[in-house]
Image 1 (cartoon, rainbow, N blue to C red):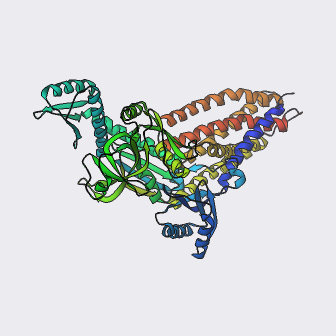
Image 2 (image 1 turned 60 degrees about the vertical axis):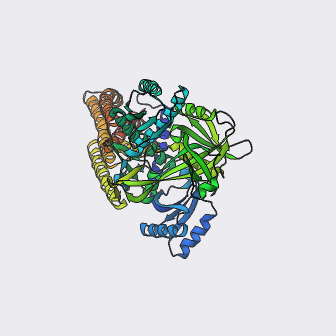
Image 3 (image 1 turned 120 degrees about the vertical axis):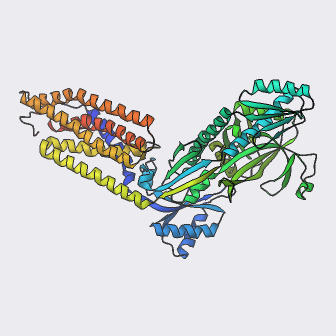
Length: 614
């Protein structure tokens, strides 16, 4: 008999529809207003704090749903935004700078769905609300950093070439090298000009050679600073689990950052502005640290304090900067003591090898450097950043180091994890300042969702009614496929990591609903034609599906390719539209061709049918 479906096809269809429905379910449970408490670099959040927080909030008369501890963070779930604001202000006063207290929206997904990693769709800034930042990279710091690296490179390479010099020092926009005689200066100038083609060298009358960046090199440094900061900001936000960000370049020096779902702009600023890295420097063992503490710091050295408060005198010359770190992970040594394993790029490995080969047996300090914004501004109106240094470990160099080594002397496994996370996320090439800040309120996002849902529901109802009236019993089959198609789109969007639903994305869903019914119309009209040509109902169904398939496939492939191009070249809203469009095309093909065929065969297939209700 015609139109009989093998049993395995029923199982496949039920599995696909059931799986996507299961992962679409979390979207029905909504989100809670929440306050999140997380640790800083020097503190730890423990589960024992949950009962104290709950009791304190209840005593303060703040209505809470529950307090949870997970992933070394405490989440206080509340009933409304007013309670959320009160709880945030109360906990801010309670903990001050000890912990990071931030407002957020937390999915209210049941535990049994969380157990299978089911989560609601991520919503874009226009639907969920959140914060929008326009950030500007401090290009002066970027060029200063490049000049600082150049000073170290000059010293190393001139020493290797056995070219003697009096001094190498960094100026505001150049590097100045002073030599002992004309012969040495000429030899150095010949060597450096051949080695550094992107630098301009100027010889002065006082045995001084001045090196400045060419315009092409300056443009390259600035472009690299912006691109690298974009990558690092994206990695940092992703690894901290704050949101799926939109991070893109705008102009020559600016970066646009959108963080959907973030309500606490202070928390977002802290994450984005955190400019931290490491320096490795030798201890100054020829001078007394007590004299430096008393205010007499020798030239060529600086006084830096350990995180435990102990002062150390360090040489100013940096052996290696954190810019060369490509990977960092925490572990323990053979004695169970926490450590951070560092991997360097090839240039960094060469620098570390050269710096340590003559210093075996000498102590080396690992200096944690952080740039924090001050309230002051420079002559151009840009924010001034203050550099803060803190020693996190002092260790004796036991052997010549290379591309891989480890940092020891850390106080706890948590400190090792936090440090490795920060280093793995990367150090910003240059400090950034927020020049524009805009908050999209959840109320506006809610209104957009409601309007978008109305468009989807009204469009779906109109199509369902039309199909039911025009195609009767087969219209019911098409309506089942349409509803399944919508559920599958939601389920797949919820399953894909990083997929974000935006307002244009909702427009893509509305469009795919129309495209899905278009495929059913083609099939049903084909069946009608076959019946008019005198074929039996079973033959009409069989030929109707077979003959319509090629037309449906051609139309959907061309539309899918258009969506693929939009995704490849588009940004922001265009990407959101293309993602839902491509997913909708795939699901509509499945529901219109496979699902409806299975249902039709289950109802009419393999039976004697005299007339079809179509």
